[in-house]
Length: 326
Image (cartoon, rainbow, N blue to C red; front, top):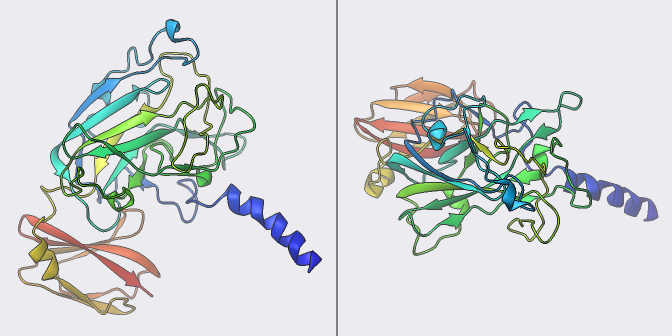
């Protein structure tokens, strides 16, 4: 019994250390490369409100000088063409067509983090909270969680294990988006998840001093690289990629009800029962298209076990269904 207790005590820190998907180059990651065909659109507008370069010394000036909000519009560049938010600053992003809620992630946020050269399990990541709105006035935050230690301040060029954070805008490095699923935002009468018009990213003030710190959804202080007292400090927003929007995905709930995929779970083949199908695309959990066809009976024997999204096209409308392969 005593031996078992010792084993359990050793295992607990490990569970706390890495309980979320890992870095973009590790098995089990949820990172989405900018080239993924899952992206149907990119942000078309951005208004930035940078915070101070150093929250403890506001007189030193605001961040973001030379890093205009226009840098966020369109496809990510993964370089220094970003918008820098400073301590606690924010950027509000808009789109040509509202984002809508479908199975799996609905959009992804890109930053420009990079791996530690000495320890590739650790990454330089400047974190940000993510909020959404369907009216531009009432914003609702994704429940973000940080398991990063708070005993010692991470220095200005310090690093974080991505497996310790969840639902922060900059979980992954340059050119790899962090996906966000609208199902994770608590329902509210003031939020229409079928018409998300604004996405807001708010820099995490990584200072662990209670006078200046910020907290995650579970009340933990969030520790990230700090201080970084220069114009390009804080969360570096590169782009926001849209996976589901009203221009590309049907919002007619009757059409969704008229689609059936069987068997599901599947192993060897699936059949899609619907009228006037023009295209079928199957995506894996990280947004990579693994199969494309116009057939309604599809051989899926070559797909690994897991959860997939099936995008079914009808003329200019689309619907998405979840598929399990066993």
